[in-house]
Length: 251
Image (cartoon, rainbow, N blue to C red):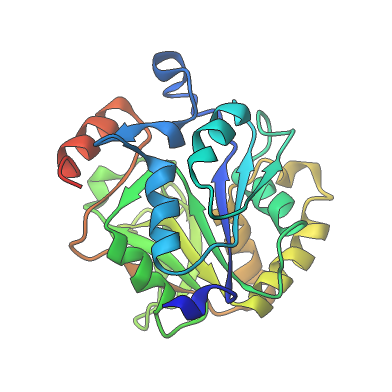
């Protein structure tokens, strides 16, 4: 797998405040520990194991804590990108700030860092035959809320639309931020965002909604990869955190 070394640029989105956790943990969510390893530590170790070491982290809230924590990775160079608007702008703007600095001629892996997942799922995404892949899990639709970001797709797994559950009421496919995009798509994303963010009302958009607008405007083919029966958690609450610790207590 060492051949992936020069193939991918990784962007880790770690700038957010994590408002639902902020009062109780007083640190970025990516530094939450499960079995004595932080969430972001686990992700970086998985990337290194795959031979990928072009790692770029968008920071904002308590950025120094993240940088100090990751000094343990002495054999790779981590590039930190500061999003000074992290309090007010969405994850899409963090992605845009990163694309200004990374090598957009490489394929792009885009990840949130408040998630934990079976390491083999990252391989599923990377080695999927399609160039542009978004992670996806299936839920009983009663388990989703109106602000869950969900997708609608064709039978061949090509994505037709990504939006809030309130706008795609019948969807049971929730988006997971474990994604890959081809180099040509990454370049087109960057060019698209340069104009997109000139409009003030776009600056608080999440990356998912930007991909949706991009699909609609540019007719780019993006597919989804199901998590199947593999373990994963998006940690948005203390309940999620407790469940994740129980699920991953051995590893």
